[in-house]
Length: 59
Image (cartoon, rainbow, N blue to C red; front, side, top):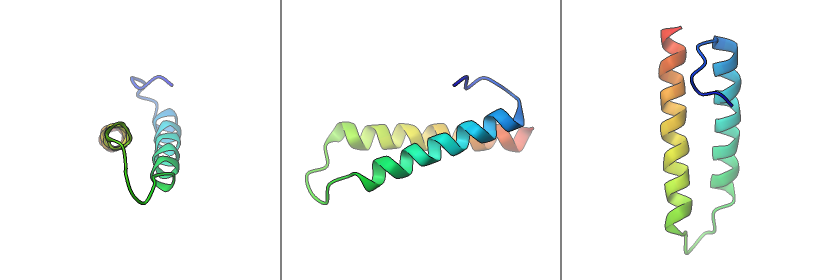
């Protein structure tokens, strides 16, 4: 999805998709032996979500 759009509806939809992906990733983590790439992807998604929320506040 285009992360540079300034359309609030499109940003909101993208935010929902990223939040769902984050929830899915977090729920699929093993109780032990979490791999670094799993943590890295979660951190990346959290940052993308934070940026989308900031952009939504500005619209």
